Length: 197
Image (tube, rainbow, N blue to C red; front, side):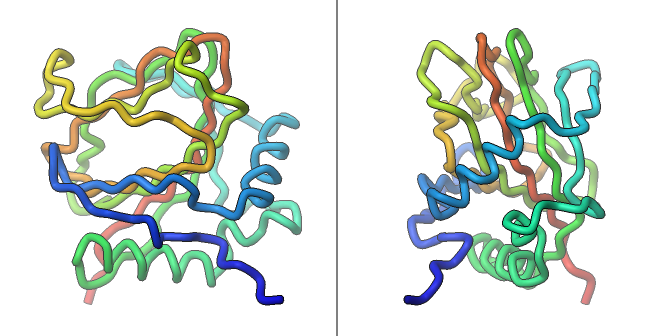
């Protein structure tokens, strides 16, 4: 029996509002998603980061000795697939992976309105949600905005486990994460830039 692909972009449909993005309900095979979540819940070497608009725990997957069953998260084949599929979805010539991190928000933490734009060093991002039995009371919604105003919400994206959100980073890609309540909200974040020709 053939092994299913690690990443499934078949349910991807690009939306242009309020900025180019897509949502996918089941990006990993379910068993693999559970392996990743189990590993994260066992306790990793988290670094606490605080800025003027968020605080969270995080660590990089790059140059990390991953468990054997999780090495495909950053394997050359996976990276190639991500770069090719995102370039196709966003109709750009070529992308290059520049970061792969895990973020964790816990009780009371949130991320304020921001756009991630820092010039041409980052152009696209893929966020994969991983958590244990999310319900609305837990919060942690990904919020999309029409502008930098916190009152100008255009869409709420449910942080269902094993769902993915991809978007084009730009001066208008305003988004935030609502407060997390008594919950651990993990996200796997792949970051890309336009590949130099």
